[in-house]
Image 1 (cartoon, rainbow, N blue to C red):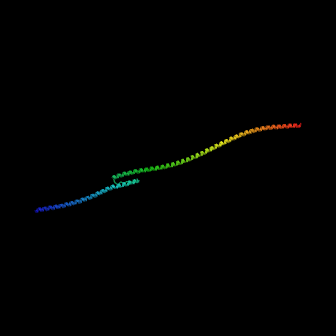
Image 2: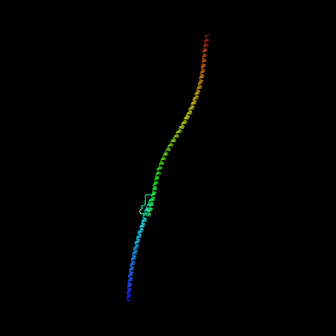
Image 3: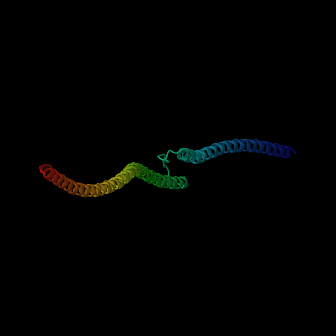
Length: 215
């Protein structure tokens, strides 16, 4: 009986020791599990933060550059720091911005050329308009001069016509005068002849009177 009691006591003591040891192991396992969980949580948090930063930072730079490009600043470019998908996207965006910038520069140059050409055409058109106005004024002056010349020619023609009429009248009057002179000359000649006849008759009468007186 004493042996059994002793054996039971030993077994009970061993069981108790085993339970205590198991409790300690369990407690240590729980503590280790908690510690490992905390470490893993911190590690996962660090990895998540790193991933978030590695995504957020390039996205922030890409969005900032895109906003600058949208506002019209075509000099904005994305600073490529890593070799990943975001760097490829950034490279394509930079290439697109370079192409757009070159196109805008060419368009600006073309616009300047068009503006210069338009100004030159405007100056040429203004000069041509001035020349046209000058030619129009000269044409108007020439037309006025021709009109005045036509009036002058008409006046000269009218004067010539009047002069011709006067000359014709003078010629008619001269012809009439010549005829009158001829008639007067004929009449004078007739009167002279009759006067001579009268003188001769008077002489004969005087002679006859003389003869009569001498008788």
